[in-house]
Length: 506
Image 1 (cartoon, one colour):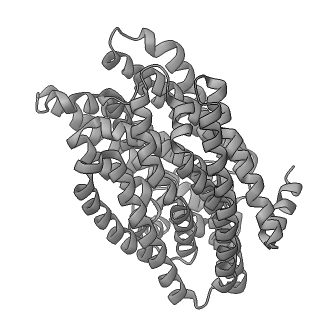
Image 2 (spheres, rainbow, N blue to C red):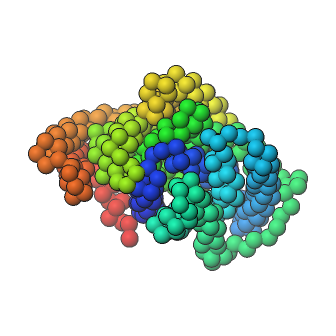
């Protein structure tokens, strides 16, 4: 699954590189990024977020207790309700925006954003369907194919950025609409490419009336409290984007490029592992195997901390070289690099907390508790918005990242404390020992990174693309080697466990 996610993230990064060359980090880039974030937020909440988190445990429970027929009935009930609700939302949003735009009720600053949202918003429906299809396949033990969904999105958009958008109009505010239509088309392909596999494993769609359906009521009761719990990062990005847009859409554009780099390791390791653990932990709870639940949870936390601690350090120390290598070309200038790198530094510091939060939240959902993560995330979200409003004038995009970092750390502490109250001791003593070993190995690895980058910068520089590649990858490779070597000398069991795991991947 991580391999499929890596492919999609690499293509996603290529897409962002082309975005940067095509539209830079100016107000139009910010307007498009913010417009896309609105249907994407609905996808995270209704699709792969709270709905999937509420649906998968019930789906697994039906399979364990009543068999496949009841399991597929649950799937059809959820899909029928999703189609009905998402159609209604799309109709209301698109219709409402049409009335607002035709009435001349918005100024020029926000008009482009609303016009883009009106085109892109139907993507929400197909992306939600794709996310539920992904949850169904994950629950049946299929992870690689559904993880390729984002690959489909990128394979549609990349050719449009290269060949269609530059010819769509004369000005950038005209050409940007080609990307909006491409997103909608990509959403259809994202959903449809999983249908053959679903049919192969026995699924057949049949309409189940959502009205008064007890399964939907059960999913709804679990989903609503979980809206904030599972999509805290996306809500933070969206709401801070609203604040940033009111100040300057360039802030949102710069911050968005930093977020894309942050999401590469977060999606590759944090989200992938959390997605895998939800059906696994749900199955253990359904079997009443709490010792297995706790050991699987702590093992998953160990993996993600071990990997993403290194990734976080690299994001922080190599923020500017990474942004320069990936984005600095065309309309993305050296000043654009400095803006995005400042935000990426602070986002890197929040990588481990966000990855841990993704897993802890899924643990609550596997236990059937969606209210606790919601309440804790609501608290942290409110605090985050307050910090953003205090910092945005003085620190701009870096202020948004600082706020996310502070509240992510707080959320980690709160989730851990409340989960321990629910389940009793989690066996975190071994995890604390591992964390101490990781800190020692990290000091060794990042010291190598600092010296290697300083040497490269002074002796070789970054005057062309080949030097920029070396500026990033030479310190990165040396750092990874030093980190693993330090882990070996510290006798960290997780290193050998991960090597055994990788040797079994075919």
